[in-house]
Length: 415
Ligand SMILES: Cc1ncc(COP(=O)(O)O)c(C=O)c1O
Image (cartoon, rainbow, N blue to C red; front, side, top):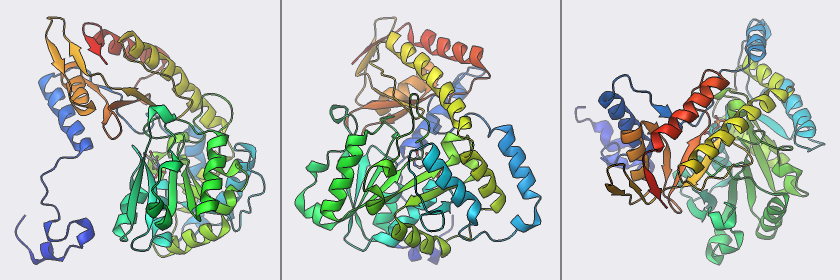
């Protein structure tokens, strides 16, 4: 690119004059590059991608049919703004029926989103002044924190550790941070750890929020993908609606990542503020997509079918990894398996390869075994594997798992 005065105009929040000049390569780019190199070095070889963070299948045919019908209706054609009543009412019904949260007022306590990601980007506009802290969990989905920093706010990281069942230790926050903390962002079932919350933890979060005047944002992107029992909503906790909002989405639970739809629900004032920011940011998701989304929330059996598939695959993946020496445990929900990364591997010729961190393990797995994973080195060294790998049917699923097993069978990992 030629030098341009534009280079000098970038805002400091994205790097100012140095925007775009960093040579650092970020994790997901490194994975992509290693994947490309592995494909080039092994023409015709099958890459097994357990690094994916999105569903492997399309939306269900009945949802596509609903979208088609709704797209044909002239009254759905225009700006949707903050939405009509269809998705709001379906969201309220869903919260009662599926999440055990009765009494949501669809007119005032829910507004659609163009997916949880934009909602996480907009909420800081409503809440963060320069110097305010957002409390974020690490490892985690960083969008709320990134935007907090854009507005001059600060992020305090709460580590998710195995010892704490990947739940943040709210008592660990230094007093000076707590004084300036405005928002706690949590996400369960969790990306990347696959951990689930408990009603006791959520009760603690409500008490913590009330005591310290903190807003809670619960990102429930994986909420309905549970392998046993009912989804656990933060809003089912007594007092939760006084302190926060919950974000739901059809991306993961209904195989609809590209459709971009969900909702923000809970505290009326927070929902109103989100709506005001949203009104100044986008003009709403296409009503046909909102109506197809409403159809989904009235058909939770779709998610149950998807969750049953992930549960079956998860059982197989856990067994496969255990056979290879990993101490993998099946999570209670999501599609992520988070497992400790090995420290070294001994190859069949007796050669031993040591790993400094999970990133090196991940690079080794893709290069040597054509298995793509995501490394996490924030709090300990872990690999994230997803059961959204490509497989045509159940028999093919077994073949893929068998293939992983075979590829790992001639080496010995050390932990
Ligand atoms: C924890 C978490 N929150 C939010 C999102 C984004 O969801 P959506 O597609 O609804 O924007 C993701 C997607 O990976 C996620 O993992």
